Amino acid sequence: MNPLRALILAAAGNNGIRRLVGTAPVSRDVVRRFVAGESTAEAVAATSALVDDGLTVTLDYLGEDTTDRELAEVTVQSYLELLDQLHSAGLSGSAEVSVKLSAVGQALDERLALDNASRICAAAEQCGTTVTLDMEDHTTTDSTLRVLGELRRSWPWVGAVLQAYLRRTLDDCRELAGAGSRVRLCKGAYKEPESVAYQAPHEVDLSYVRCANTLLQGDGYPMFATHDPRLVGIIDERARWHDRKPGTYEYQMLYGIRPEEQLRLAQAGETVRVYIPYGQEWYGYLMRRLAERPANTAFFLRALASKR
Image (cartoon, rainbow, N blue to C red; front, side, top):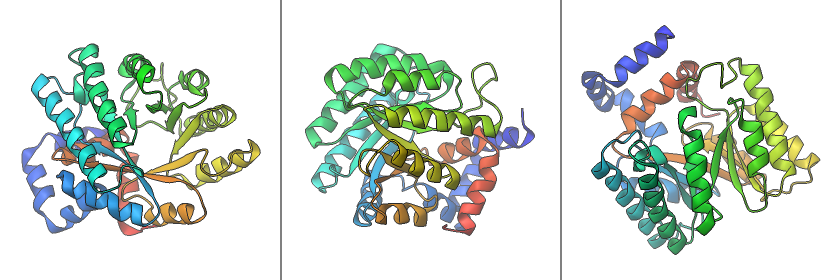
């Protein structure tokens, strides 16, 4: 294991370091930059501010790898509360939710995860918004896509997430590029074996572009999750090549990362959706995101130094 990754993972499980990160003034600034807060009210307030700036939003109630039915139920109830508050605030037309199936019981029972995700989808439908299923490590890909297929029987607008670094993803893009299909394409951040995932950054980038072309030439609604300026430029060019007008696809970026670029794209007429994480599990989220790819550490530090 990469020594930096091992160090970050060790820090993720250290309660003393968590307290330090949570209480030190500089650390609190870091957390507030990348996490909207711990409460539903804070998440809704952050959403409102972004929507006022012409952006759209997807919200993730933090937590994953749940092996307790009661905790899975807490997650479901948190999403139901969030959806209700988004609707009450008049934000559900501009904000949806992202759900990790592992947070709603996937590790316990796939059927439980399906039932819990169905409850969230039904509430989203009532509130006039949508749901996207986050993708996790490759061992859950087939299960997540099975649940996606079942959910789409009732809610065809449920979004999928595909990770360009997986060798299988181009085929998955072809399968999911049909009419009405919402697909978020990201590079992927989990540490995966070479047998299932490209390892070299340039290979991942090439796969991302191949997958983007496949989604753009399809009849679905692609959602391109990237902060890479070069990829943003390529997507812009390929969208024009495929005669895609703004509004028939979108860009997605993380809360706190390149906010000026988010506004620039939105002001240019592009749909930009900001991924907002919130909840009490912010520490694990932040540390895992760094540990998934240690190079992210430098990326986050650069983001603190510059809003560009």
